[in-house]
Amino acid sequence: MPAKFKESAVRIGATRRKIGMTHFYLHSTPTSTLVEAVQNDNTRPKHKQKYSNELVKRGYDLGTLNQ
Image (tube, rainbow, N blue to C red; front, side, top):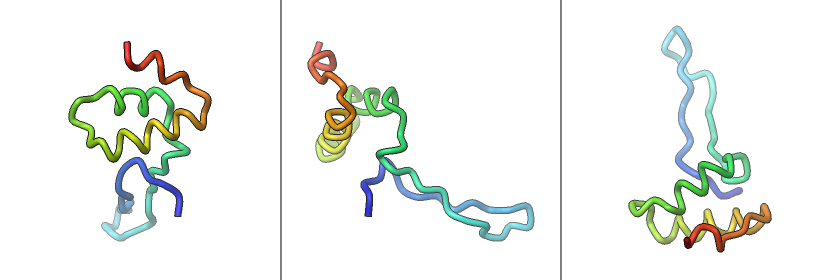
């Protein structure tokens, strides 16, 4: 299963019935959101590593994050 940015959410219809799921996969998360999460002090180190790996995969320069 692909890595997720956050937990999946249930979509609820007008009749208050479950109409589907919304998944937040790491590969579909915008780069700007990943950069903000890596720079945030409240992000767990385990998640920071996951997000950094995704940024490297996208070709983002991590050297600019440390400045």
